[in-house]
Length: 263
Ligand code: UDP
Image (cartoon, rainbow, N blue to C red):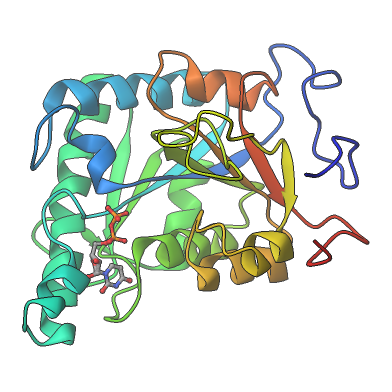
């Protein structure tokens, strides 16, 4: 378990100024499953609206926001490949699923009066702008919420890696991973009641202990670019705002000199 002293300049609960977000520009990654709500498949519009409300709070506090949404609520390449489908084709179907989620989320955000743009890694001119890094930056500077669709545009990757890639390209201060649990635990909190949540972790510890917060490639990319990953629960009202204020339960994964990989 890590100690909770800060080794980098990320303010935690005690020293984060109230009202002032601790990150200026963030990428929020949510899985496709987070959009399902209690349904077994697809998009639950009420859940999408709830997440949109969280994003609207952040934007109204002056945070520049971009989003990557997974596709697992609709199609997962790996599962189809396991049943005999060619992996690359299955992955392209998975990437198309992320475009559907992006459009669903765009609609939810616009219902909350946010200006949005969907930029797709797979050119799809009639429904989304093509991904062009400088254009995406410009949108964000103008306060628009940018949704990156189509993953990385390449099979054999995941939307976690797409999120890390875009966070690095956009120069984000943090990658926020909204999940169903409020951080990273030393065991599965659903099955182990004694599981303990980490306040902070080093990237290398995540990799060496195989904690499966995100893909190894995504964690490595964040480590190389020194962008913290904040894992928090996206389920409760106000969750994103609390994380941005340095309040609320979460796990911060970052470079902690002297700690990486030693445990
Ligand atoms: N995918 C891909 N390349 C990418 C991103 C996604 O091939 O860069 C495919 C892959 O098949 C994956 C699917 O899209 O299973 C949905 O993404 P993911 O599983 O990451 O979604 P999540 O688990 O976050 O809902």
